Amino acid sequence: MQSAISEPVPTTGAATGKYGRLKNFIDGRFLASASTRSIPVISPLDGALLAEMPCSAAADLDAAVQSARAAFPRWSRMPIKERVQVFFRYKYLLEKNLQELAALVSEENGKTMGEAIAEIEKCIELTEFATSLPQLVTGEVLEVSKGVECRTEHVALGVVASIVPFNFPAMVPNWTIPNALALGNCMILKPSEKVPLSVTRIALLLKEAGLPDGVFNIVNGDREIVEAICDHPGIEAVSFVGSTKIAKLVYQRSTANLKRCLALGGAKNHLLVLPDAKPDMTAQNVAASMSGCAGQRCMAASAMVAVGDVDAIIEKICAEARKIIPGTNLGAVIDKTAKERIIRYITEAEQQGAKILVDGRGVTVPGKENGTYVGPTVIDHVTPDMAIAKDEVFGPVISILRVDTLDEALAIENASPYGNAASVFTQNGGYARYVIDRASAGMVGINVGVPVPREPFSFGGWNESKFGVGDITGKSSIEFWTRLKKSTVKWNPEAGINWMS
Ligand code: NAD
Image 1 (tube, rainbow, N blue to C red):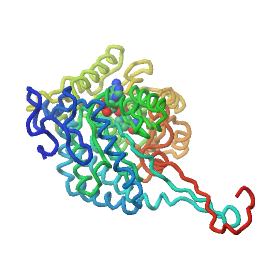
Image 2: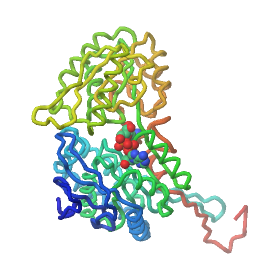
Image 3: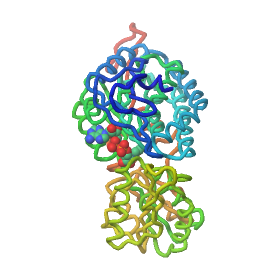
């Protein structure tokens, strides 16, 4: 695989790691970037240098856009039933290469092998949905006056861009690739500079599945290339997934350039635990939600609002958290900066009076001393004014806030500027409905710690967790990746002109 995704001879004097200096994927080929600037790609598992990622320049993006624009007429005119054949084959290739892809995801992102396997399984499910798109885009037709028909068709936009974050190196790209391409678009994907390897392998699988050259391209890079994407006149639409700060910038810049944009941002998800919640199930869900993927999920539980006396459940949550062992069933956080940020939040909360029940600071994994691990952390008596209660911590940490009533719990949830997910743990259907109606979040869970809607339901938050209209996956994404063509048709020209015809 190395020769396919990297240059055989490193172009920098420094060591470039196991995969060498990466190339962009343009017009079905791996091409070296015009830029000499690069960023090291480090494995969070053990600190090993994996690769050098080139910070591509505008010229690289231009080449990719040209290739995508050249591929667009043929690809978009192909019937959708033919286009999705590529994705039937791609789905099979994902299944066939599942272990190898998962190993790469784990190596570059730091998540456990089990989590990486689940991520590839999710890619398979997303692709399966794309193969059903012919059934969902049939359009409408109606005889609107005598002999006159109106019909609508979903038409591809052209060249689109997908800018993705580090936390799901394969899944988030697959939120956009199968749907956007099956609907007839050509794409430029900008991976996260922290995890650029998995998508390179995905590009090869798409090619092997029969995707024509130029339909899918990868341009590696950082801020410079993101800004160039927002400004490029050859790109019609931009989808972005990442932090709220950058989502806002990308949304503002690309829409100012009159592009369609859907930008998903960060999150602060609240789990509301009521005294009637089932203790074991609740504790397992809370612990899994806050620690899965080392807490680096935009759907992770970050704050638990304890309503009334739930001390027995909190004890069980601590017991569950103590079973989570860094380096065994808990992966690493993405890098040293992230580790330091998470520890800073914990320490600051402690200094302000919060009580650390389970402490994940000071963790090292024997044999992986350069890995960036933080242990599971449970913090009680956090108050709403503390930074740890308000900010996205993005680590395996749960802050417990104590209130007396469900309305007080909802007030805390509603006050957050984010709005990705919220869940309630209760056995009372009336309380559950009360929370569904009042939570200010796009995705709500009842007795579910990570309420990710599975296909064909769409994924997307509210408030500062998403800018733009519609959702990024499922049926809702059809509206983002296509525009409607309306035609009015009359095949009986001998008929008289009637109302507005
Ligand atoms: P990030 O915002 O730092 O980076 C996302 C992308 O933006 C990357 O490709 C990066 O190269 C680019 N970027 C970074 N800084 C930039 C700048 N100054 N100008 C232009 N582009 C820039 O996010 P991340 O750290 O990679 O990912 C974690 C964040 O993503 C978390 O906030 C998480 O909640 C969020 N996320 C949200 C969802 C969702 O569905 N809402 C899903 C996954 C991740």
